[in-house]
Length: 285
Ligand SMILES: Cc1ncc(C[n+]2csc(CCOP(=O)(O)OP(=O)(O)O)c2C)c(N)n1
Ligand SMILES: [Mg+2]
Image (cartoon, rainbow, N blue to C red; front, side):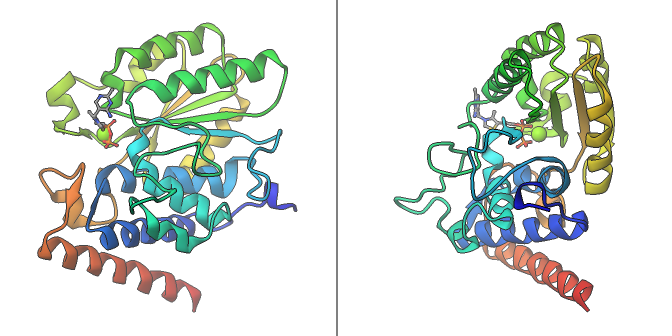
């Protein structure tokens, strides 16, 4: 099996490695987008561990699949995943946000190999993903496109314009993954934009819509495999996730979107890191 098609048999372990690196990066900095990085760890593990055709030695490979992280502030998790797949040395991760860094806090395609789209302005990535999928389909190519969008991000009208376009053109080569972590920058999504029911909304737009346990990498991988078989509609996977997943201290914070760690927070995150490390080492024995 070539690098390009290598898969990870143990997705749970892969996810734990990604989560551990995210924590190490943000703990070292003392601040960052903890909540929205931690909730997408399993989605990224399923994508890069099993589903996405990629070649770290040739990031621009013609046959690659495309991942667009529309919620660009989740970049630490994407960078960690790419590093573990070999797109960059793991040590480079710890330059996140440093002066002159090539790893800005939001995903940047001009600076990071493997990142397909520069994102951070909510709502734009999904439109770009639609365009990529449209072009690939028009050219009769088999590459697939995956787009991770936030539940709060779906407040943006642009997302629904893109959803109409995706359904109208039956872009079944595209899978949307909604990180339904119930929270956005300034509170609970239902308090801000009303009832969510994303599966119902996307189904009404013409999508094949599934609800998936979003902190279960195997379940996500299975749903992604099912999506390949759906050719009469694009697929959306609404991932039932927790903002700050894997770190109770972060998940329970009132404001966990962008967290600046105080002494208590530093200790709590350090404890979560130690626990993850022990689990990974225990699994090795
Ligand atoms: C167009 C635009 N408006 C506002 C913001 C500020 N902003 C950054 S993240 C965010 C909330 C995102 O919430 P969600 O999509 O639920 O992300 P997550 O829960 O994963 O952090 C907002 C409003 C932005 N980046 N872009
Ligand atoms: Mg959210």
